[in-house]
Image (cartoon, rainbow over all chains, first blue to last red):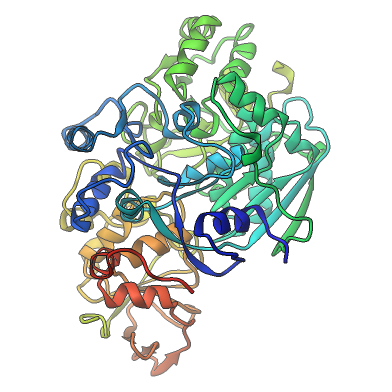
Length: 419
Length: 173
C-alpha cells in the first residue's frame, strides 16, 4: 500500500509501517519554543521531573514574539527562558535574532525528511523544506524535550496541485490566500497537505515558505512540498550540508483523502478581510477601503524576497502621508543583507519605522498596536479580531506588493501598476 | 478520573459560533503579561464579549460550533478555561492543536451537533458513559465517540501525570 510523504516520515520515525489514522509514538529530530510558549513549557518540563533534555543540540528557544520586552510580565518570561537555557545548555536566540520560523531553517536545524515539533502553530512552515513539521502546545513540546518522542495520529493527506503561471503582481501569498478562501478555515483539519504542480515547482524557497506557513490556516497539521533543485540550492546558499537522499517523496499509489487542482494563471491579487483568514476577496473589489497602517514582516512574508519586492516599488513611489508603515525583517541575517542592498536606507527615507527582527506587531503585544477604527494592511497570516492588540481595529492580509501599493495610495490597491 | 465523571452546569453559548480562535479565548496581550491561570481566566473571550467571563460559573459548559480553538498554539487558552472551572467544551468540531492541548491538561471536549443547545440550558455530562443530557429540554444529545487517547489522558488528569506514571508515552493504536 503506497504512502504519502507524512505516512513515510512518521513510519521512519516510529519504526513501524503506518498509514493514516493510526496512532504512533515517534522520535523527534528537532523541537523548539518561543517566548509566548516557553513559560508553560518550562513549567511542564519541571513537572515531568525528567531533569534532563533528551539532546541539547535538538532543542532551542527563541525570543521573538515580544522582543525586546514591552512590559514587566514579558521580561519575567524572558528571564525564565535565559535561566533555563543556562541550566540545560541549550541554544537561545535572543531578542533581535528574528522570527523562529525563519531562523530555525536559516541555522540548518531543519532538513528534508525530518520530524520537527514546535510550540508555535506556524511550525508547519518547514514543510517547504520537505520536513514533517507541526505546531503543538507547550506541554506537548515539553514531552518532546524530556523524552525525544511524542505521539502522533498519522494524518490523512489533502493533495493540492497548482499549475499555470502566476500573473504579474500576483505572488505565492495571493495563491495561498486564494486556496484558503476555497478550502476554508477548517477545510484541512487534522490533514497533512502536500503541494504539487508546476506553479509550486517554479516558486523560490522564500515564496514556498509562505505557502507552507499558512497551511495551518486551513486547519492542516503540516504543508509539505517535495524537495527539488530549488530546495538543494537554498541549502547550498545558506551553507548548510544536506544529504539529497534524505528527501521523501510520496508513492505513486499513495492514498489521498482529497485531491484538489487550481489554475494559478486565473488568480488575481487577493486580500483576506477582517476577521477570518478564509474571508478572502479580490483586492480590486476593496479599493475604497482606507488604510491607516501597513505592516511588512512576519514568518509569512518578512523574508529578503519580500523586502526586495517592497523596495522595488518604493524606489519610485512615496508612502501616503496618512499611513504609518512598519517593517520587521524576519531575521538578523535578512536585516544585514537588506542593509547591504540599500533597502533599509530606502525604507527609512520613505518614512518607514523599522523594528527589531521578530514577530513585530503581528501578535498584538507591541511595535504598532492600531487605534480604534483603524484599518491595517499586513503581510501576516492572521487577521483575527484583536490580533494586533485592539479588537476595534480591522486587519486585512495581503502580499508584500499589495501592502506596499496600498500604503502608497492610502487605500487598498492592486499592485500591478507599481511593478 | 474524578471530578468530571458526571458534571452539571449551564450552557454558555458563544455569540460567535464557528472558528473561535485561541486569540478570542485568551488574547495575546494577556498571555505575556499574566502568568497566573486564575487571573488569566478573568479575560477569556474578551474580544468576543468583555462581560462574558464574569457571567461564567464553576461547572458551566462552553458551547460552540465548528473548528473551536483554531489559530495559535497557545496552551494558555485551555489553561484559562480550566482555571475558570469549565466542565467541558462542547463543539461541532475542534482544531487540532487546541484539541491536544486541552486533552494534555485534562480538560474534556465533547463533539456533537450543538444546535439543540441554547444559551442557559442546564446540561449534564456523564463522561464515563459518553452521554450528554439537555435537562432544560429533557433530551439526550448524541455525541461522537470519545477517543481512546483522550480517555487515557483524562483518566490521569493530563498527560504529565500519565507520562510520570508510565515513564513515557505508551499509547499506540
